[in-house]
Length: 211
Image (tube, rainbow, N blue to C red):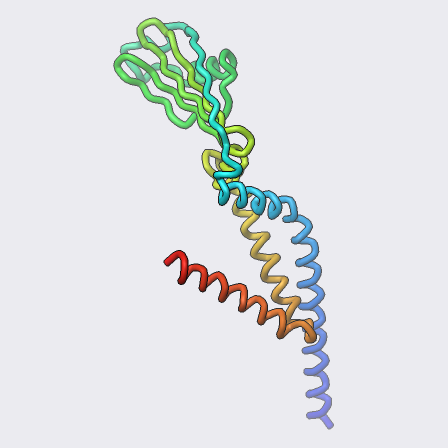
């Protein structure tokens, strides 16, 4: 009798944990899917625009401007005393330069400043003698903007975190989907066969047309 009761208790414990895992997997799968819906949709669409650049190609638009700043800001014998912040903020306000500064160089005759963001770039060359400068802005349009977001190019640390979170969420969706399939007896075998076929097809495409 004690052995039978022990076996029954183990069976009940197993069934209880099985239900808990199934419920937790279902809960995670549903809510993580809803949370990550917008992110997954975005990366799916931009995956198409990147893969078919000939059809969704972004056109580069360039514009040039000229200006002049206080020569005293750049015409200093001791280049370490050149105030980069004043120059950068002046260019932002005067010429509506966007994005983050990516480069600031001081040569004998000129100062060059570059700003880069997703689908956008601005390059400025300042004459150290008289403070005159030229601004070249380049925009890749909306498609170029979202493509750079997809690639994480010139997007900064905050967007890098978004990409990491998106990867984690998509991994959770996949894993919880597999867990759910384990608890669906009628569809479990067919589900895993289809998953295996998907992997096989991807492998065959690589071996036949890519390798």
